[in-house]
Image 1 (cartoon, one colour):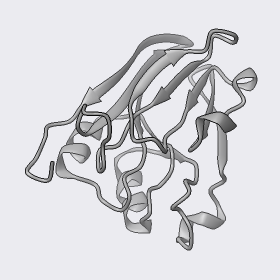
Image 2 (tube, one colour):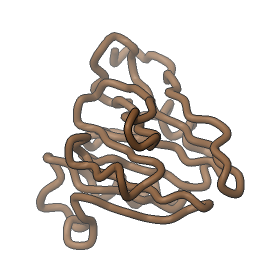
Image 3 (cartoon, helix red, strand yellow):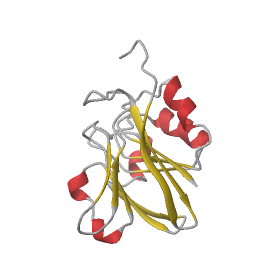
Length: 156
């Protein structure tokens, strides 16, 4: 299964982002979506699992989305929270966070949990340009976990 990981879109889904998401089995969004329309658009591509970010307020989805979201997919326990420090790494196999707009993927030394921050495709920080994450699994095996750089556009 292919899980495309996004965070901090802040009300803007670029053509480059939408093209990169084509073919995803799930889209995991780590908060600061800031647009009801963007959520509906992503849901037309693939099922969306998301959490609320610090800028997600007064949107239609706020009543049904939580600050921390847990789900189970392809034999993995997933957790999504906008803030890394609020993730409970003892209760998940894969942890997704956002907020910093800086991408990374790593293993927690104590728990072995995979932690990913996909950066931001909209307002990137850290010099890597616009990014998303991608995690590929198959029947409980983790096959791939990477940060994907999106093409730079005149916006950058």
